[in-house]
Figure 1 (spheres, rainbow, N blue to C red):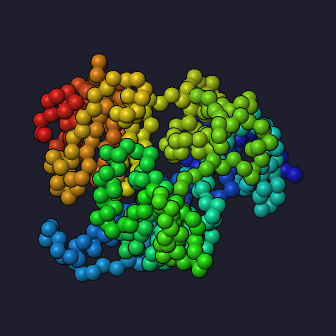
Figure 2: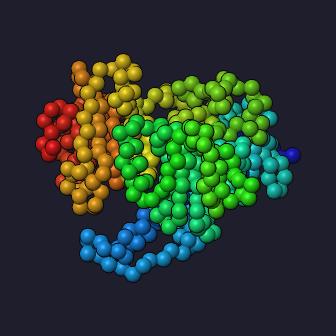
Figure 3: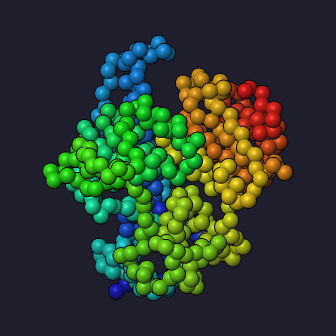
Length: 464
C-alpha cells in the first residue's frame, strides 16, 4: 500500500473543505484534500448553484409565457417553448465553470488533491480507495467535512418515480404531474420552478403552513404566490406511501381521511441528514449531538486534533457557515486565535418571493428576554418595487428598545436575497436604528426599504 504524510488532511471537497484547504495552504500548512465525487460538494454540483440556475430559467420561461398574454407592459410574444435538455446543459455549464475554478484555486495554492473515497482508520490515519489501488495517509490534524444526504421516507424510499433534489435538478424530461413532499425551502424552491416550467405541482406538508421554520408574517406572501401559480397545497397531511399501481401518492389529513394525488414523479424534500456513516467515522467514538458531530466554538471534536465543519456538525446546514468554519479552523491550526461566534448568520429561501432572515425575529427576541421594538416597511410603498412589478412583501427590523441596537432583520420580496449582506453587516458591526436611518440609501432601490424600516421603528418613516 502506498503511503503519504501531511499536516492537515481534509475529508470532503465541498464549500467548507475546499475553503479550509485553500486558507491552510495560504498559511503554509501542508494540506491534502480527499474527495470521492466532484470538487464543490453538494452546493456547487447538486444543490445551491444548480437549483438557483434552474429557478432562474423557470422564472424567465414563466415571464415569457406571461408576455404571450395581455401584458400591462405592452410586450407581446408568441407562445414560448422550452427545451429542458438544453436548459440542463446550460446549468451544467455553470456548475462546470465553478467546480473547475475550485480545482484551479486548489492547484494554485499547492493543495494536494486526491480523488477517491476516504475511510478513517484512526484519528491520525485515513485510507483512500482509488482506481489505481489503496492509499494510506497519515496526518497531524484531521478535518471532517463530508456534508449531508437527503432524508428519505421509510414508506416511500428513493427510486423509480420517487426522487430527491439531485434528480430533480437534472430532468431528462418534465413530468406532467409532480408531487412534492415537504414545504420547506428545498421543496418550495423546486416545486415553484417546476410549476413555472408548466408542470402540475402538488405540495404535501405535515404541518398547517408552508416554510414552518419561519414566522407566519414572512410566509404569507409566499403562500399567496403559490396559490396564484396554481400549486395545490395539502397542509396538515401525512404521506402514507404510493398506491398499489405506483402512480399516485396516498395522503391522510388530520381528520384521518385518506386520498390520492396522481403523480408521474414524487420529489421527497423533507430535509437532509449529516453524512456520518459508511466511511469509518463511527470508529472514532466521538461525542455526538443527536445525529451530528458535537463541536465547540472552534469546531474541535471530542478527539484531539480532529475537527468537524459544515453539515456533519449540524444545523444550520448552510454553505456559507461551512466556509466560515473552514477558514477559521485553518487559521487556528496555523496558530491564530479564533472562535466561531458570529453575531449574524443569514438564511435565504429562493422562493417566489424570496425570504431572508438574519438575527432574531420579534418572537425570538422576546424568548431571549429582550425588550425590543420592530417595524416593517412594505414594498408596496417602494418605487423600485413598483417598476419591477414586485410589490409583495416587506422589510422588518428588530431592535432593542433601550439603546436601539439592531438584533434582527427579516424580509420577503423579489430580490431580497441581495439585502442579506447589508443585514449581516449592520448586526456584526453593532449598528443602531439611527445608524441605518441616517445612512443615505440610493434611490430608487429596494434597499430604501431597509432605511425606511429603521426610520419607522424610530417613529418617523417618511414614505408611509
